[in-house]
Amino acid sequence: MEQLSRGSARFAEELRRLGVTSDVKEMPESTRSAAEAAAALGCNVAQIVKSLIFRSVVADEAVLVLASGADRVDESRLAEVVGEQVEKATGKFVRARTGFAIGGVPPVGHAQPLVTYLDEHLLDHALVWAAAGTPRAVFSIKPADLIRITSAKVVAVATAQAGGHRPSAPAPIPPRQCEPARPSWSRRAR
Ligand code: 5CA
Image (tube, rainbow, N blue to C red; front, side, top):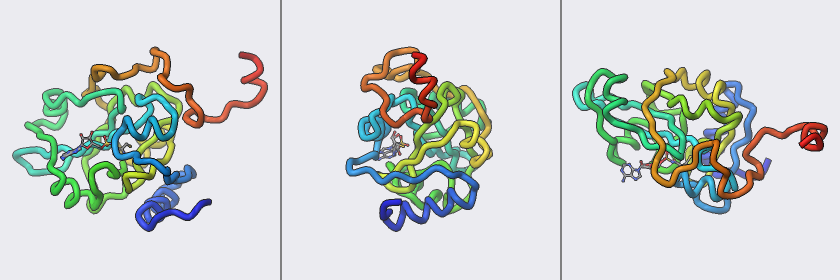
C-alpha cells in the first residue's frame, strides 16, 4: 500500500478495526466535494457519499446524513425523521463534533458517536465512495457494509439535485475503478 498521510492512515486503521477490507486511496487531486471526488475517481457523482453534518436546533445534537453526491438533502424531510428542526452545521461545529474538517468528514470514526441516517438512493449502487478523513482521501464500500459500520437508519430524505445524474442516466465519464471487479467471463458475455 502506498504511503498515506497521518490523517488517512489513522482512518484506515479505524476501517480495519471495523472489519472493512477496503483500502484508503489518497488522490493526487482534491476530493473535497462530491463533484471533485467523482472527477478524481472517474465515476458517477451519484456513487459518491456525502457525509453531511446538521445540527438539531433544540437538542443541539450533531446529525450525520449520508447521501448520494447527486442529491440534495431536504431539511424539512430530515426534520421529520429527527423529530425537530435541523440546520446545516457550521464548519466550527463540524470540526468540534466530528474531529474532521469539512471536505474530509468520513462516515465513521468521529470524535463522538453521531446519530446517523443513510438516504435510500445510496442503495442503488453496488459500491460507493466516501471521504476517508482528509480532503484528498476516499475509500470504497458496499452500501450494506456502510449501514453496518455506521449503524445508520435508512431513510428517504434526499432528492435529485439539478444537474445530478441518477443511475439510469449515462455516467458523464465511463466508470474506471468505481464498480466491483467483474470476472472476465462476465465482461466477455457483454
Ligand atoms: N470528500 C467529499 C466527497 S466524499 C466530501 O466530503 N463531500 S461532502 O459533500 O460530504 O462535504 C462537502 C459538504 O460540506 C458540501 O456539500 C457542503 O454541504 C458542506 N460545506 C461546504 N462548505 C461549508 C461551510 N462553509 N459550512 C458548512 N458546510 C459546508
